[in-house]
Length: 339
Image (cartoon, rainbow, N blue to C red):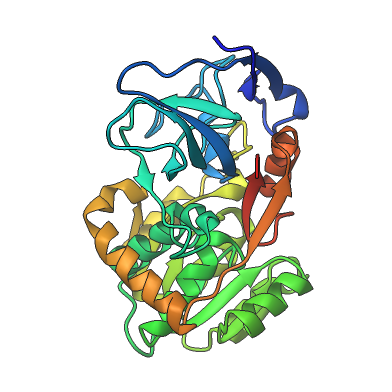
């Protein structure tokens, strides 16, 4: 081990409901030297995403949970600072999955080199990364929007939702966003070019959503769940498609409600011939080349815009993450770990 210090943030306790700062712990450890075939990465940027809340639980899911005392996981942009790997040189910038820490060893598996001249490297964590690909694959494969249809997306100012609405418009559909607060709604309507946007904090949210969707909803891209879903569901047209990407309003729920609405839900799924499908973006890995080509072109042409919310300092990651779960971020949330 070297005498330099690696700062890392580990899971100290499994949250009971809403996570607390005490569920995380900041540690200082030595930095390991890379062995043959390895490289040492210095983390430059860390992505914070809602899925991380699920990794804090011990329950069975589509991915293994973070162990107690384990480094919180997450996508990262990193610089190669030492290399004993033939495929990477010192100074290379790579996309990795190194988690909440300042340095990490890698054997090179799963790394993707980034070209800083082609696009800001932070976009590899957002619009040109996992969130953008989630929007692209989920909307086009499951949602299959057609010209003239109405596409509604929750969390419309976020990394996934903002891309969903803009792609929907590119495909000729009408995009209706749902966001929280006047500033986010204005951004979605004016900067992203959605056809309409509704503030879910409004007292008459359900009525406003209905007015914004006079022809009903053909595609609903679900990021939130909870009361937003309650307002959307009655507006779904026959043969509507619902890609289920996330349920952030329910991630901190400890127990299910005693009000069992499943029978009513399933009855309407049958009567209206609805397609409701959950998905994980890695299911569509074969679409990545098309995504990189299409999204890069849309950004270059101005058809897709994006916003990043950058927080400085790894030590601020826990508080920023807690804010993310409450919708306090504005755009793709990224922590700048080093310059």
